[in-house]
Image 1 (cartoon, rainbow, N blue to C red):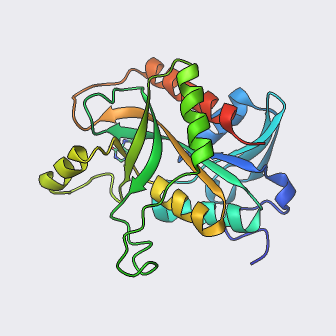
Image 2: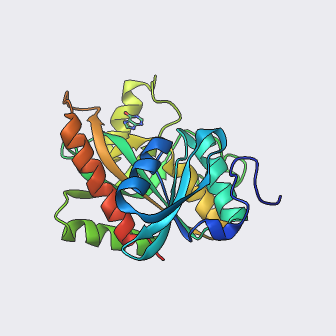
Image 3: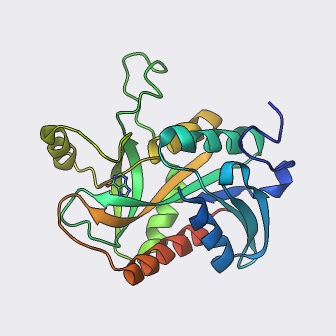
Length: 239
Ligand code: HPA
C-alpha cells in the first residue's frame, strides 16, 4: 500500500510526528491541538477522523482520533505504524472503574490488556497471548503522573468489544477478583498493533464512570481530569 492510505489523507509521512496521541473522539484530538499545541497543521480529515501535528513546549507531536472499539482504532494504528513511520502511539481515553479504590478522575496506566476480541485467535495456536505496552514508556508515565500528584493506578485493563455489555455477572466478578482495574475499548488492539510492527504503544485513561459505585461526574471536574491526562501524555511523548 502507498500513502495516502484509504483512511488517512496525509500525502507524506513527514506530515505526522514520530509520536501520535490518540483519543477515541476526533473532537478531543482537536481540543488537544487547540489547547496544548503551537504551529498546528491538520494532516487528515478522512471520514471526519481529524489529525493534527504541532509542537508541545518545542517537541513535535501529532494527535488524531481513533474512533471507538478495536476494529476502528486498529485501522488507524496499523496505517500509522506501517505507512507513516510512526514510532509511538499513546492512547488517551476514558474508562469505567471496576475496583472500589479506582475513583472517578483517577489516572490509570495499562500494564496489559485482556479482551474477548478474536483478533489474535489464530495467531498463537492455543496460547492466549497477553499484549503489553512499551515498558520504558509505561515506567516514565507512571513516575511522571505521580510526580504531578495525580492519583495513579497501574495494572491490567479490559478492552471490551461491547459498551453495552451482556457479560455474565460471574465473569465480571472474576475479572474484578483477578485485579482488572477498569474497562475501555481499544488498548488490546493498540498493544497488538505495536508489537506486530515492532513499535511502541501506551494506554493512559481517566476514570469517567464506575461500574462498582453509583457516581456522577460534573462537567468541570471531567474537563480538568481529562486535561491532566493530556498533559501527562504530552510530557512523556518521545520526540
Ligand atoms: N465501558 C467501556 N468503555 C468505557 C466505559 C465503559 O463503561 N467507560 C468509558 N469507556
